[in-house]
Image (cartoon, rainbow, N blue to C red; front, top):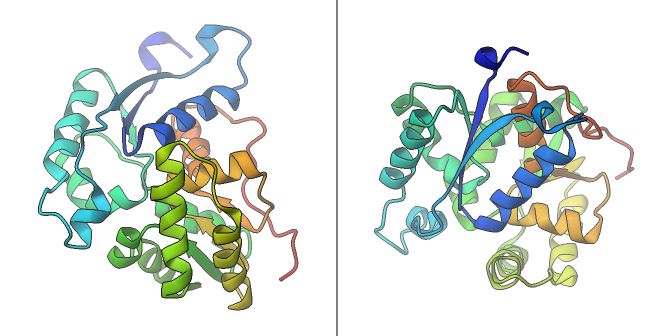
Length: 246
C-alpha cells in the first residue's frame, strides 16, 4: 500500500484506559506483519478524565461527556485519522451526534457486533453491559434492527455485572467469576445463542479467564472491522460461530 494511500485509525480512548490499551495490543497481535511498516498507522487519544458515561446516562451526574469526546475526535482527525474507533460500548449512546459532527467515518461497535452475531446464526443475544448501555438500549435497538431477539440479566445479576466492571476490572483486579458466571447462566437459561461482552472491561475477562464461544467479544469485533477498514486482513481473529449447544 502506498504511503499516501494508507488509512489512519483514530482511537477515541481512555473510556477506560485498560480497554483502549487492550484494543491497541489486539490490533498489533492480529496484523499479519513481518516488519514495523506492515502495521497500520494509528493515533490514540486517551483522555481518562472524560466524565463517566454510565453516570451521565443514568442521571447520577450532570457532567456530559459529549463535548470532550467531540473535541478529542476532531483532534484525532486533525492529526490524520481517516476512520475512528471508540473502544467503549456505553459511549455509543453519543454515537449519532458524534458521527454527524466529524468528517470521517466512525465505526459503530454495537451494531457491528450484533451484525456479526446475526451472521453466525444468532436468534437471541444476551447482553452483558453497563447499566448505562442497557438504559440507552444500544444493543436492544441494534438487535431489533437486525431482526433478532435479546435478553438482559435480572436486576440482581446485573448488579453483579456492574460490580465486576467497576469494583474489579476498572480497579485492576481479576473478575469475581461467581458473579460473572451467574449472569451468563441466566442468559443461557433464557435461551440465548450467544452473550455479547458489551462492555470493553468485560473483554478483559475473556482475555484473563479464557471464556468459551458462547461469548462474543465486542472489542474483538471492533478490532477486526478496524483492521479491515484500514485495508488489512486480520489473522487469528475469526467472526463468531456457533459451536456450543444451549
